[in-house]
Image 1 (cartoon, rainbow, N blue to C red):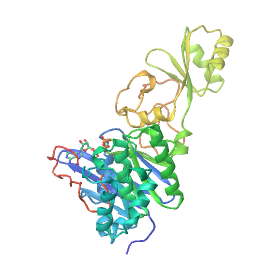
Image 2 (image 1 turned 60 degrees about the vertical axis):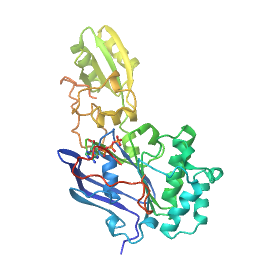
Image 3 (image 1 turned 135 degrees about the vertical axis):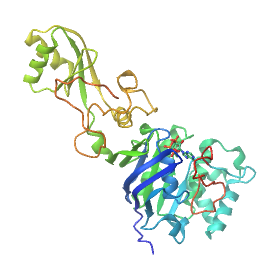
Image 4 (image 1 turned 45 degrees about the vertical axis):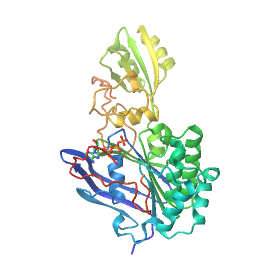
Length: 367
Ligand SMILES: Nc1ncnc2c1ncn2[C@@H]1O[C@H](COP(=O)(O)OP(=O)(O)OP(=O)(O)O)[C@@H](O)[C@H]1O
């Protein structure tokens, strides 16, 4: 018997496709009552992890459970987990309603449920339209409707905002939040932190198959910091003056100084008092997106790279957040060290439209 908690537990999960280590020793928990974002750049192992959670591919090591059981052991999975994975295929000649009714029949769910979930996802007026004419956004909504047919306790969604316009994204955000507010569990993957930051409470960030952050989004936000980049005639003298006033200063490779948690006015005043001429000065603020970029070693492609371009991969984020949660080592802030800038499948329903991955790594693509 499952434990009914709605909790997803991932313990030591790994997956290799031949020589490719797609997922490496992942550990995390997805708690009911909140939306957990599963974030990472393209190819970081998100889909592979979700497929293992959903029993579509077997892990090379470790285990994933829902309600305390591996997916394959859930007695009526459609009423426990609804899922939308990336590739969704609908019979193009079938109407949205008939598509849902065929799934409802297979799941032993009343026909009327089809119309209810269509209304729920905002496709009520398209019930009699053939899915072949649906836009990408409408297909996303229909996939979500299918996942909701069994009134599941847990939702697992892979990149659900792909193809949605801003209004659709806002709608999805509200939907997921209200779904979680009823005490149910939501795990949603994305390579775009920007699209998810107002939706998720908790984040698991992966890079190259490994977890680089697992924690509260609020804690990650608190790591956002400001710094002033300054070029001085006498850097040594300015460093002494700044450190004397309690500032942490880093030397950048281009000769500039980075003064953490400060602003240009304060730095200018201190430089004047110390009698040091300044040649240029720039205020910088690291936002959540830049932190995400740093955590994923510059693989992130969802926005502009911090410092105007991608830094060397594999380095530590320049400004680590306070507290734990990060796998990368803490940055050095001695003030004397050179600073290196771094930078549909539907579930519970019949498995039609889904392909099992070739676990030998020679399938040449994803379903
Ligand atoms: N069936 C497969 N055979 C071989 N390699 C695979 C297979 N499925 C995934 N991979 C590889 O595993 C790695 C992780 O892929 P995965 O699709 O899980 O990443 P992702 O984070 O979901 O990326 P995206 O955001 O682009 O969907 C990639 O290097 C990918 O090429």
